[in-house]
Length: 139
Image (cartoon, rainbow, N blue to C red):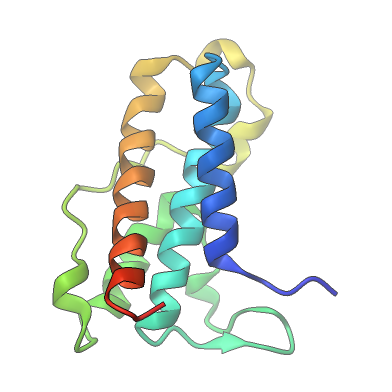
């Protein structure tokens, strides 16, 4: 069985999204930016006390089983109540309100830089928070 590794998934999705973005493959880049943000925030949520079902290999709380379009709010739930949380506030308003996991089935003509760039910025911001947690010795 492959175990969940939110940190590795965050880095992998970000790297692939950037590669696709550089090739103007907007639709798949956009999907992966959402996945990168979701995985990065879930890694930080673990740090801030998100319960995790090891046997089921997933978050324990049903409300934490969300994708990029729901994770911003869930992240704040854990961050705001943790002693290290003040240093990890999200500096952006939620850029993923118009992102949905089902968009992976959409025609690529629906995606362009104007749609993708806010998601890219959001995923990059999450990446900066993950890097900060590494530098602070928390990950």
